[in-house]
Image (cartoon, rainbow, N blue to C red):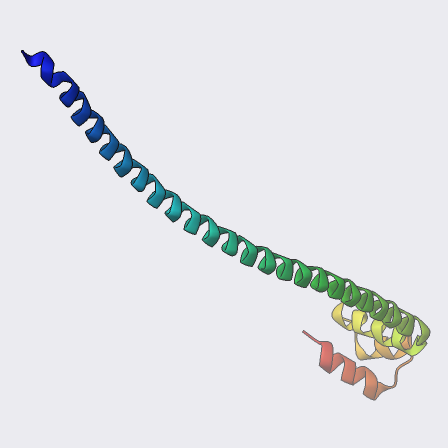
Length: 130
């Protein structure tokens, strides 16, 4: 008696299954579209980050070169300064006199050891006395 309704029941079940499949396919299409938008956004962000990284890298390389140039200039300046100190013998006398003052030398000792006039010896003593 119920056997006559089996084909109709199968048809209704097939229709329900078909509707459910359409609903799920539509949902997957929406999610796929959302993921495509997200991927495009991430790719654009990645391109921006690459450009910024390249700019930062270029700046760092430029700064490195500038630092090397400045280091070279500093070394040359130090060499020139040492050469100037070595060339001026009177500077050696004043350097020696300052060291003597720091060690507690008197005016007479400065005058005799460094061959300085009394006024210069007094000036050095007053400037560098602790």
